[in-house]
Structures are given as structure tokens and as C-alpha cells.
Amino acid sequence: MHMFFEYGFLALCAIVLALLVYRYDMVDRERWTMLLLAVILGMAGCWFAGYAEDYLFLRFDFGIAQMAERAVVVAVFEEFIKLLPIVGIAILFRKQFNDPIDGLIYGAFVGLGFGLEESLFYLGLGGKSFGLVKMAHIPVRLLLHVLFGAIDGFGIGLARFPGRWRMWPLVLFLCLLTTIAIHALWDYLLCLHEAGRIADLLQRVLSIALLGSLTLVFGVLVVLGARWSREMFAPKSLKRIWGWPFSLWMQRGR
Image 1: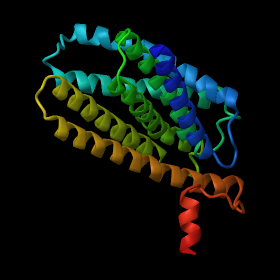
Image 2: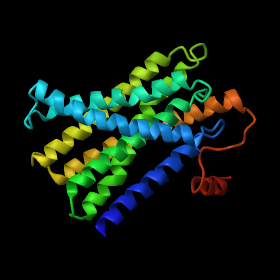
Image 3: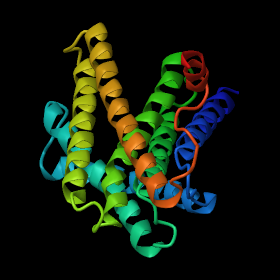
């Protein structure tokens, strides 16, 4: 019975995040079939990354004691892996990848697939054990990978319009650097916590700070991407990024 709740909760979290991200694609919305493809490619990328990382740890003799090295390897490898499906979609499905915000949207769904596969792996390791802590990890893990993937892919969306946004290589580099740094720090904190080398409260506070920083970067990119998308495709559109409950607060402000 506990498996029903675990996998049902995983599916619910994934659907909620997918709907939230889909809302930000406000002008030229992507087909659900394409977004589903991005999720599947993200799951495949996570499956491959798991085996590849195990090989790299053995190849460079990174044991449990080399926590920082392992965290950096995982962060670099996984964030570059997330880029591959986004680039592939941009090249093979150019008619679908035609909006400055498309890189962020497809990247978020690739990240969602990555988080789904990783969550399925950890749920499988848990066996018949059931706990609120394990359940609480699911939405956090999914959200992290969605944010990582979205930020990774943002520069690829601008690359489709090099004449308009010539700084896209710098944007892509800075976005990738941001996700790698936060990913590595997140994993390093988890390793320190599991080894008993950092207090629970400090680890939680620092993790919340990292997640908040990542969310802030994502929010800024969503605002910029939606604005540029509207300028290109629907300059007279009255759609707003901030929906309920923010719309209620804005109405009161007026």
C-alpha cells in the first residue's frame, strides 16, 4: 500500500510542476507531445548519467572520502547531460523551437524527466520502508532538477536568434556555471550531513539558501524570456506572468 502512496505522490508532484512551467510558455505554446519527449529524454539522460558517474568514480578513484570531488563530477556531468536533449530538440525540431523562452521550457521538462528517473531509483532503493522524510525528498528533488534544466536551457533558446541576442554564448556560460556551482554545493552539503560533519540545522539553512538563490535566478529568466517572447510574437498581449494568488495582491494594490 505504501508504494501506491509513494509513486502516486511522485506523479502528483511531477504533474503540478509540469503545469506550473507550462503556464510560463504564454505566447507560442509547445505541444504536449514535444514536452513529453523532453521528459523521456531527461529520464534517459539520468539513467545514462548514473552508470557514467559510477565509472568515473572508479576511474579516478573517488571514494566516499572524496566528497568534494564527487560532488563536482556529478554536478558537471549531469548539467552537461541535461543540455544535450535541449540542443537536439533545437536542431531537429526547429519549427517547434522558435521562441526565446523555449530553451527554458524544454530545459525544465528535461530536468523534470531527470528528477523523475532519479526519484524512481531512490524509491526502489527504499524497499518496503515508508517515511515522511523520504516523501519530502520527492518534491525537492523534482524542483531542483526542473530549475537546473530550465536555467541550463535558457541560453540555447537565445542561440536560435543570434542576430537579436549576440550575447547568448555568455548567457549560456553563466547559466551553466550557476547550475553547476549550486548543484555541486548542494551535493557536497548532503555528503557532509551524511558523514556527520555538519549540523542538521546548518545544513538545512544552507540548502534553503541555495534553493532560494536558484529559484530567484529562474524567476529572473522567466520574466526576461516571457518579455522577449511577447515582444516578438504578441506585443499587444495582455497576459501576465504573475497569476493567482499574486493577481489578487496586485488588484488590491491598484
